[in-house]
Image 1 (tube, rainbow, N blue to C red):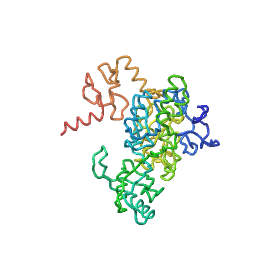
Image 2 (cartoon, rainbow, N blue to C red):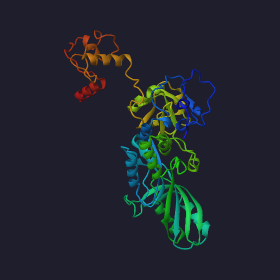
Image 3 (cartoon, rainbow, N blue to C red):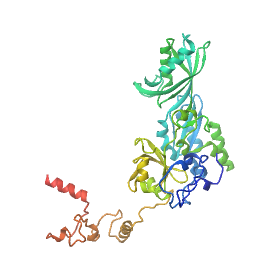
Image 4 (cartoon, one colour):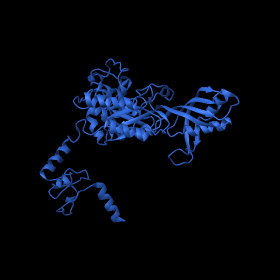
Length: 447
């Protein structure tokens, strides 16, 4: 936990882009190494009285955007553990990163309230397990044969869920990224190995297949999950007792320090991890685009991110248009998950256009103030709504002035020079002249 002044970890507006870069290698979460990001603009209008640094949110906001890396005990199901956490914390909504069988222990990421919007992305993250496998007989070749069998079952493999599974038992393909033999006890017939795999892989089925390859038969004796995506059991893993004690201290003693250590901000799920699994699989973490404070609330309402709202962006952003990226504020808050519509080189040179399209909004609306609807046309429409010349939705009524209804298709400067002055009588009432609607009606009539 970083204890410091929240204002210390905010991207500041600068007059010159060639100023000496700040060392940001120690900055928290999504702002780490932000000084290495490409710069689109350095000057912007900061909104300092809106939003919070993820590590310094008020306690209720901290819980509202919180995630818990819980150490699931053996015997209760994942859904039971999540329901207990929901009752202990008093959360309205909870979700988890992927179901563990009742006898399986280890890393289970539980998201609270607004953070549940990240559950789907976490369920699809790769997983890492430590497995104890029981062999049904002695293996010819010993440790070498087991190593070869483990290497055989890497890459894409066919699997059918075991009988104990609650899902439909149909054949499917799952990717095994790496199998590593950790220990082999020949006398007891026990094998301990680690597996890095795609979400939805059944290790129980994998152990059965290993037994068939070795020619002696085998079954899974014990299983523990040690990593989900960027989060490992080394990253603030807590027990249910820790959570219960932290909530008791907060409710009865008004002490927040313990619950802030137990519950992490949701940004930890999106930031680059430092675990062995992340280093082997490319570093982990989402590519980032830093957004102007004045554009944040529009994104929370579902608007597309325009190039004019971009401040900084990672090098490889947009190289793969199907890759999910994260949009963040200058304070390091996660705004939304998105798909980049431009590559890094296009963002650098473009002055107009759509930089990213939203996939999932994370931040609540109106955390930042509204900054749209302040142009001359928007102000005129607002004034006409107040005077009754437009209805409350801004649509045309009988009281709407004719000049406001008319859409000039001919490039002329006035109505007198337009189509109504070319011999046809001006209609007494004119409906909304949406050009696309008019074209469709004329096309249908001509058919």
